[in-house]
Figure (cartoon, rainbow, N blue to C red):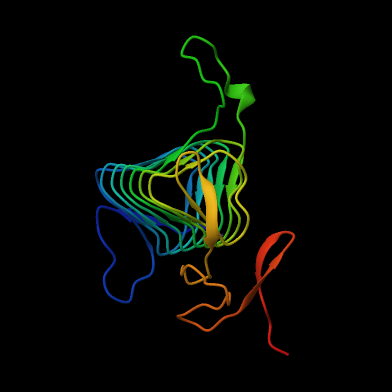
Length: 204
């Protein structure tokens, strides 16, 4: 991840590939914003956060201190990505989805030394209004449906729905639910189930 200068309040012109931060948003000292990333209205990136290249950060988004966001991520409106959460490349966070980082918060008890990490794997999708309870990693290319509540680790390519979240199938890298053939209807890519979840087959 490379840090690039950004210009507040002035969107890039065609052909430019620098970061953009809307004039209503704040990027604290020590934060890194990658080339081509756009941060829109009323958002706040806290100290030492690292945001990769070509990301889109929507309105009213908070990126916590020391959070790492990979390249090509899309974080939609009204999302807070708290400290100890990591988003790998290509993660989609739907509007108003929720991350936590303390398992048993109390207003009157300080628990900042008890944060539980959460890693969202490459290419995963988190639907609108879904909740990710801290300490539960989400595998690469998994799909958490809108409104689901994740209370345990999610395997790669798993489709999770409901409260509490439960797996109801598999999805391809292109985000399609797979039938019994485990073949993506869009790309033709074929998969097989392994002990670690779903994995793509490579033709001989």
